Length: 273
Image (cartoon, rainbow, N blue to C red; front, side):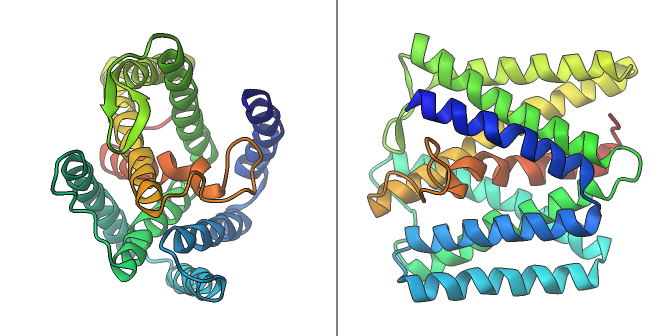
């Protein structure tokens, strides 16, 4: 399993780098829209929809994204970012409740499908907002990817080696506090490296490291949210498109939470890389 994960990741990394740096804003937006529509199809499957309605739900996403792109109003994008950031505070509440006897995660497929909108659309908007930065858009996205995937990898290996205390036993029994801390420390290391390489001022460097800690922390919530829905649906993986990793949602679950928070921070704090 680990070998297959490594092989798939090794194949994905150069493709992702090429997409980030070589595609212009239009083609990048289209590619992420396709990725989001696949994620939406998988999310609808977790909500127990038939394949027919999975395609309907996925097509609805493409329609919404096309409308957003045709408008291309940064004020609208900013409002979507705010909605995306706010949603993750609700998700934290749902995860805490799932750990208790109350389990407030909605059982209704309709409500879960609405949750899917708040998961995926803000992610698409955030990546487009970051890409739109004329001088360093690609670098911002690359930094975000390194931050999330680096932290995720560190959390996996630290948790496997030293993990003892479960982070959220009812949601994802294999995730541990030790692994999460390892991921956050890795995130700090990645941010510090970027601060040094990009020759940031002390103030901007401290702010970037702080934003990175917040981004990695909230990415854990994204991971736990999908795990919670999969547990309710009694499904191990959201799909099978990525051998060793599962589906698209299994690979971008952390990013759905991290991207809106990171983009919101970059826009409001004016940090450059």
